[in-house]
Every structure is written in structure tokens, then in C-alpha cells.
Length: 109
Image (cartoon, rainbow, N blue to C red):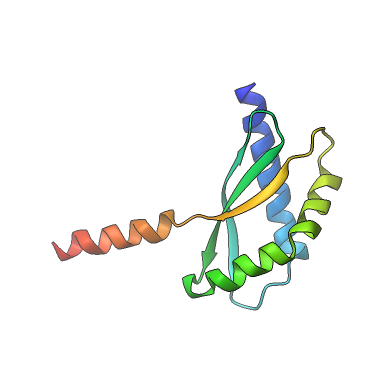
């Protein structure tokens, strides 16, 4: 089962990335990248972790993703030929930001 979930995670990552690139209207200079997809074993829910650049636009990007969620969900449902269709939940991935902060602190030492 874990192998299946991993394949589904990768498939969802590819499709949502494509949907964001082609269908999501973000203002110029704002980039949303999918860093990780985590689908529940029962395939009902999927958490999509996104990195947003520049960081000062996180609020704007999250609002846009929430506003366009049904459009993204619908486009994903058309691309996936499976049941159940996992419901998307977006989360901001702050891993890179935290890594940068730690790196700066280490350099100061």
C-alpha cells in the first residue's frame, strides 16, 4: 500500500504543479512550487506543501490558492482516474526559510 500511496503522491504533485503553472493567475514575480505531497492511506485527503517566493508574498499566494481551490480540485479530478478522489489541502512549507535562518545564525557564531 505504501508504494501505491507514493506513486499517487508523485502523480498528484506533477498534475497540481502543471495546473498551478497553466491555470493559476498569480501576479508577476510570485512563484509557487510544490515541495511535498502527503496523501492519507485511505486516499481521501492529500496535503500539498508549497514553497512560495518571495516570502513577503506568502499571504497573497495562500489567499489565491484558497480562492482557486475548487478550480484546482476540479482540474485534478479530471486528470486522475481513480476513486476516491483525494481532497486537496494546501500548506506552506517553511523548510527553506528555516534552513536559511539557521545558516545565518551559524555564520554569526
